[in-house]
Image (tube, rainbow, N blue to C red; front, side, top):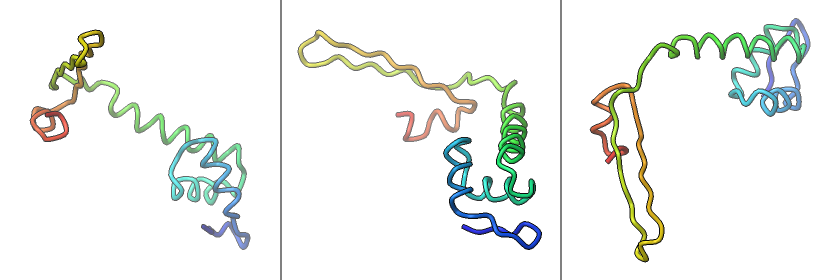
Length: 98
C-alpha cells in the first residue's frame, strides 16, 4: 500500500495507523494521506469531513419498510422479538429480511 506525495511515499504503517484510528477503507486512508501531504491529523480531519458528507446525504431518509420476526426458545423461558427496517419495499421483500 503505497501512494506518492510529492516525491515521498506514504508507508503502509501510516495507512494502517490511520485506518485503525478512523475505521475508513484502505484506499480512503491512502487518498487522505496523499491529499494532505502525509499529515496524519489533517488526513483524519479530511476523512471526518468526507464521512460527515456521506452521513448528511442519508440523514433525512426514513426507514419505513421492514419485517418483524419472533423466536421462542424450546424451553419457553427465552423469547426474542426483532424489528429490522429499510428504506424500500424491494429490500424488505428480499431473502435477507425473510
